[in-house]
Length: 156
Image (cartoon, rainbow, N blue to C red; front, side, top):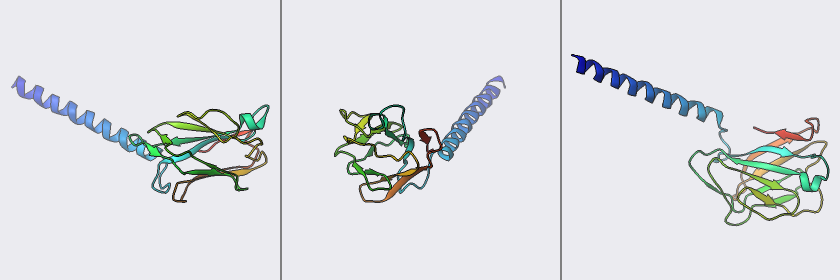
C-alpha cells in the first residue's frame, strides 16, 4: 500500500508542476504585445531629449519579444513624423528576447547598438511619433510622446 501512495504522490507532484508551467506560459503570453503585424518586435523606449547633445544622446530601443525566435530585420525601417528614415542593415538579426538601441548619431554597428549617422537630431522634443515598419512596409509598432515626459518615453 505504501508504494501505491507514493506513486500517487509522485503523479500529483508532476501534475502540480505541469500546472505551474502552463500558468506561467499563459501569463507571459498575456504580457507580451500582440497583433504587431505578425511580429513580436516593438519599440520599447525613445530617448528624444537627452541631457547634452541631442544627436549623440538620442536613441530608440527596439525589442524582440519572441522567446525562442530570432527576427531578421534586414530592410526594416524606423521613421518619425517628418519621414526621416533609418533602414536596418542587410543581415541584421535581432535575437530572441534581445533589444537593439538605434542611435541618431554616428558609431560602429554591433548586435546591440546601431547608428543612423545623422548630423542633426531626429526626434522632436515637443512631440513626435516613432514608427517601425517591417521589410514589406507593414506597420509593426509606433510610439508617440508629447514632450512632457521628461526627455524619454517608455512605450510598452
